[in-house]
Amino acid sequence: MQLGMIGLGKMGGNMRTRLRAAGHDVVGFDHNPDVSDADSLESLVGSLQTPRAVWVMVPAGDPTEQTITKLLDLLSAGDIVIDGGNSYYVDSVRRGAVAGERGIGYVDAGVSGGIWGLAEGYALMVGGSETAIAALQPIFDSLKPSVDGFVHSGKVGAGHYTKMVHNGIEYGLMHAYAEGFELMAKCEFDIPIQSVIESWRHGTVVRSWLLDLLAKGLSEDPGLEKVSGYSDDSGEGRWTVQEGIRLAVPLNVISSSLFARFASRQEESEAMKVIATLRNQFGGHAVKHAAAPAEVEPETGAETQAREAAESSPPSESNPAQGGATA
Image 1 (spheres, rainbow, N blue to C red):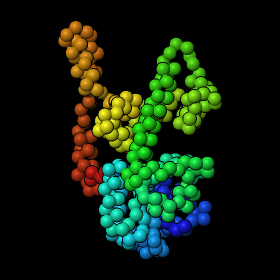
Image 2 (cartoon, rainbow, N blue to C red):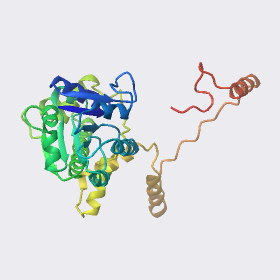
Image 3 (cartoon, one colour):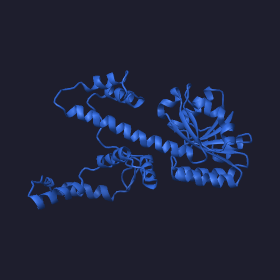
Image 4 (cartoon, helix red, strand yellow):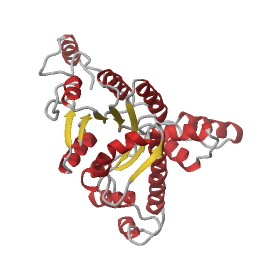
């Protein structure tokens, strides 16, 4: 089957490779010319036979919005667009309606598998009409793991909704492992945590691929000394919690794991300063005083002259950091 693939990063590039290995004709476009087959969206669409199928694998948000908006202007009735990024399901429903008005099929595909998908296959949760899903089934069959890992979740929006919940659960699972790890690290029994994690991979009720990855990470960095306790979130956990509020579903574990990530980014908590202040005020409880700011040595005359000369000189290719360049 022929497929256009837009976005050839870690996921999209590996998906193209897996599909080609299965015998599909994949034409890719990426802003990086080193990996792109087509030099523009227009040339990508022009190289495909009708009815066309184009898979969009770019970051969620504005990149996906801009790509699909432009793509819909290039496609014709009977073509199909697949959004394989982590889009918000509400956006997928809206985009699907716009595509439908033009007679273009729309499929929202939640994709899980990460960098391991090339070898292991990608779990796919797709939303769309029966007709669109059937037309794309050869692609889905080649991308999914050999045993299973594919589900038609329902109408447009259901694929990304299912993937959103999947990622929310992932937040909770990871944080449960993390809390158990810290508990063993803090106790008085000198537990060989790496050995315990490895043993849990076999026969226990908590074994999972995430646990396998934790064991792998610990084998590479037993004391976790190469990483800090700072953790970002990519959006799906927030959307999951928002759905819990909308539907009055208590998401105790998922919401706590999301908030723990927020806490990981704080060098100092204003909220806990308030708690400490209140405890001191109503009960006279001791507080830990903030460290005094370090004193800065005054510049010498020569240092001042050197700094001012550097600040006034124009930016150059040899020193691109000058001139307020951003990274």
